[in-house]
Image (cartoon, rainbow, N blue to C red; front, side):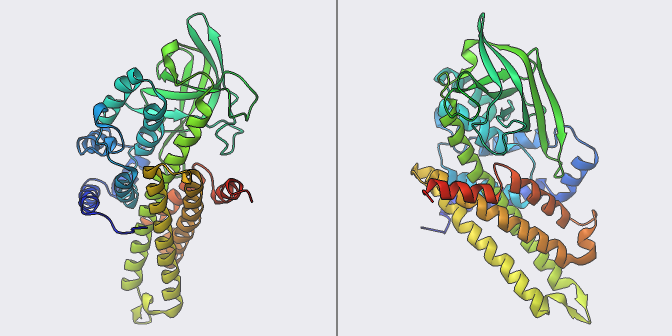
Length: 380
């Protein structure tokens, strides 16, 4: 597999790196956290990212996208992860946007994708429930036929960027038992629909998430995304692609963590010499580098599989997530430890990467879940 960026991808990487370094720093992330900003990101910066075309990289040109691939999106996501950028690419592009592109009708795509790609419409996908524990088909929320459409009742948790979203895609069961892949439907619900409540969650990484409750929320027949009861397979495919994208962001964050640590090892003096000259710390830094490069290879392979639409997408998504979850947590832990006492203080930037590592580790399933899934997909 080619592990070298093309000329176009390298140019995109340079643009993204320059944008992130000039517009977003840990200082900005700290300010958003300290002010308890309800959105947790900047709408103005989000629109700037839209103008650069990043929100439409993987979507067809007919809907305002660039018609490129996940390999190109990976380049941008890695740089966003390097700067801990909290703007809602994962929720809008990789979750809700991908669900609409893969499962929506042409009229739904025309109505929702162009304004999302333009940065004017915020979307979120609500699929996790209190007892689901990473299982996308664990759906207790019910959709029953009403007088002029459907009526939704249930509760969703950990809805990424759900607070402040204009539309929320909600999974609900129209038939079958909890855990069945069949009988799941996805509905597009207005955030101001009667009976819908959205409560902001405050996570350790300060990013936007929400609990969404539905009490007799009525939606029309045109709110159904795809066919009735056919949302299970669509949801699984969407989450695989979002998992692959999250791994690219994690790769960028662990690379930044490594660089922060190396810079500290080169400048922190003890006994009259830089602590980076100590053999034990050299070995630990080398381990961090190796883990980063191993993660890079599998993340690139997963993005390539998505672009080529191979049957191995699910397995490679799990392989990448298991690798990145373990590697990011290890590298963040090592970074804090090698910074010593200052690494334990809130004043130092390294702690923000550790907090992001802990949240990203559990998003879409932790390493143990994905190792089990990888084994199951291969019949072990």
